[in-house]
Length: 59
Image (cartoon, rainbow, N blue to C red; front, side):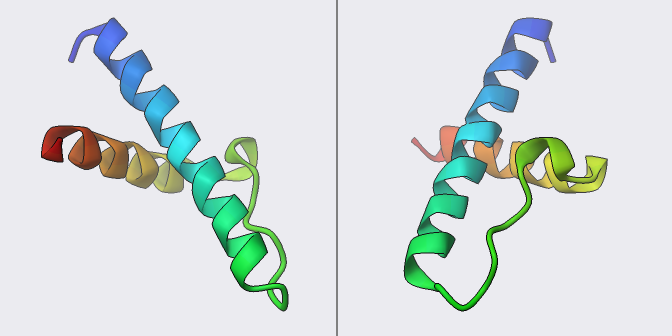
């Protein structure tokens, strides 16, 4: 994967993560917020990047 494409998917993953966090915080007040992007483990970040790649591919 090119560096440019990697950067694009990384950015999309961060956007998806933020959108998910906002939804969870709004819809479920009893649970605390999900961790910030920088607090995620590497495996969790990879999972978000994979989600972003699948969403972009589905378009």
